[in-house]
Image (tube, rainbow, N blue to C red; front, side):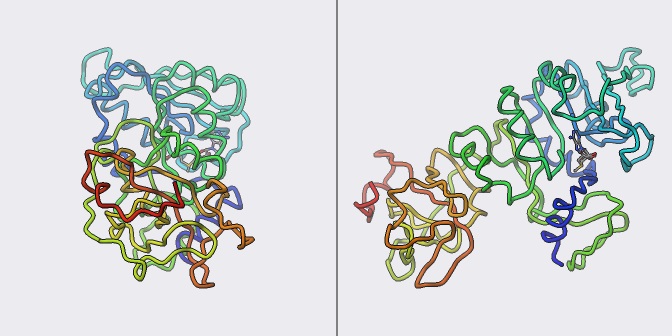
Length: 344
Ligand SMILES: C[S@@+](CC[C@H](N)C(=O)[O-])C[C@H]1O[C@@H](n2cnc3c(N)ncnc32)[C@H](O)[C@@H]1O
C-alpha cells in the first residue's frame, strides 16, 4: 500500500486520529505572523491538553499579538494523546495571555470549560465559539473535510487548515479555488508529512518513524494571504501542437508538466493537479477540472461522451486542472499568442 492509499483507507474507516507535529506547524505559521495581530484564534478539532496547535499558539501568544486563543476537544476527556472517543462530553479551553508575567503558560492561566455536548465542530455551541473567532487553525478530520470547509466559508472565517491534495478537486472545494475563496498555503516538504498516530504505518516508503504515519499529498489550505501566491511562474516553453496535443474530449491542449506550460498559448490548457501549488491568480485563470464536471460545456467536445477524465489519442490521463493565461495587454506573453480562437 502506498501512503496515499493508507490515508484513503483511514478516511474510509473514518479513522481521523492523526496528530500534527510542532515542526510542521512552525514551518507554516511563520509565513503569516503579521496577519494574527490582535486576532482571536480557534483550534476546533484539538484536544487543547494535547494539541500542538494549542500549545504553539499559547507559547507564542505575545509574539503573535493574539487577543484570545480557544480550542475545543472532540468527545474524549481522557488526558492522553490519542482520543479514544470514550466520553460524549468534551471541554474547551481559553487562553488570554501571560497574566502573571512569568513568560510561561501556566495551568491557572488557562480557563477550562465544559461543553454540553461532544465538541463536534458542527454543534450549536461550537459554532458559537466559531462566531467569536477571527482565524481558525487546525488539522480537521480528513473524513469531514468538505463539511468543515463549508462551515468556515459560511461563517466567513479566515482559516489555515491541513487537508489532502485530493480535496482540491472535490466538487464542493474546487469552485472555492475558482472564486478565490481558498488557496494553498506554503506547504510541506515534497507534500509529505509524518503525523503522530496509534495506527500502524504500512506505507511502502522507507521513511518510517516510530509512532508516526507518513502521508503524502498533504497540504495547507487557507484564505490568508501568502507571498507565493503572488509569485509569477517563469515560463520558457513555446507552444507547438506536437508537444502539446489536444484532448479527445476537451477543447484544450494537454500539458504534462507544470513548468512546461507554454508562455504563448492563449487557449485552455490541462495541467497536473500539482499546478495548484504554483497557482497565481494574477497569472492564470482557473477554468475547471476534469474529474468533477466543473468545466463549462463549451470546452467539452460533444462527440466524446465521457468528460470526467482527460483522454489523448484514446489514452486516459491523470486528472487535470484547466487553466488559461490571464489576458493582460501589458504582458508580452499575450502579444504574440498562438491562441485557439474556438476557445474564446
Ligand atoms: C487529523 S486529527 C488532528 C488532530 C489535531 N487537530 C492535530 O492536528 O493534532 C482530527 C481530529 O478531529 C477530531 N474530530 C473528529 N470528528 C470531529 C468532529 N465532528 N468535530 C470536531 N473534531 C472532530 C478527531 O478526534 C481528531 O482528533
